[in-house]
Image (cartoon, rainbow, N blue to C red; front, side):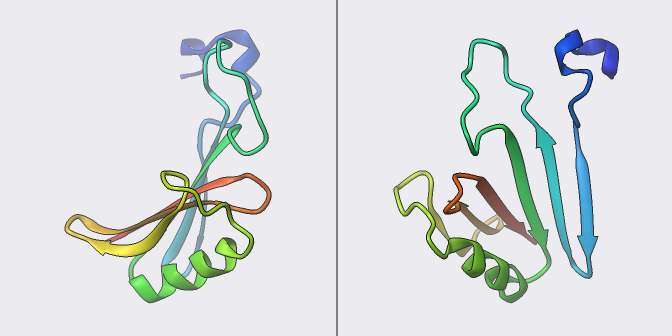
Length: 101
């Protein structure tokens, strides 16, 4: 896929994944067009994927300490018709999305 990206993106990481037990963390580097201004927190995408609400809630609650509590940026972890979902921007400005089955 490297050839499909401009030269300035060749040193970026398209996807990385860490797994610990039933929880997975997936991340990718800034891949936006040069028209978008990179800011702290929007240069990576981090996804936390788990099996149960309780295991995701533990991670969510720790990252939510000091998080921005604005609509759209913060969605409390909850059971939805399609599964578990939540999102937040932590105290450092990093955006996290949570998914569960």
